[in-house]
Image 1 (tube, rainbow, N blue to C red):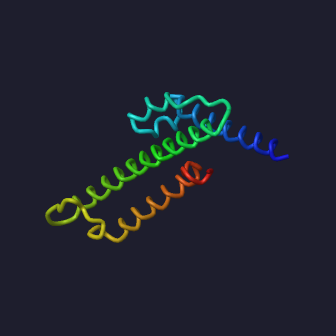
Image 2: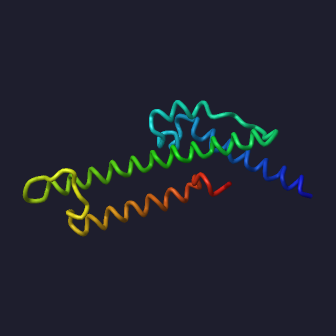
Image 3: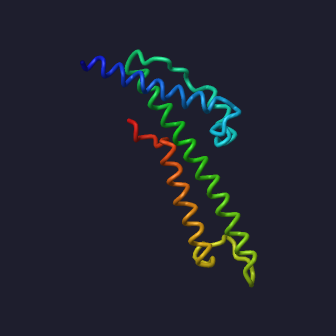
Length: 138
């Protein structure tokens, strides 16, 4: 009945959480290297929830999941912005005339603007594929 369905769902939530937690705690993992340096230490303090005894445990897990998802999203956005800035400045430096800072995307050649937009779209699609959207599973 409903109790078995809830137990099954709870078990799956805990299992998924444990997989993600262990992936980010393993310092050799690619996932761990995606985190900003401050978060690499903090991830070791993620609670080790093996079961959800009550509603408080459930909401603690939800809160932890959302913090982890938002941290990963922010790290990915920061990395992408760094690459976009590097490309933008490099292209602007190669252009004739004085370098104008900050570099405005609309002043870059059209093919570079398109390349940057494609990079952003790909990064967005890659993030969605991770399944780390903080609200989708809840």
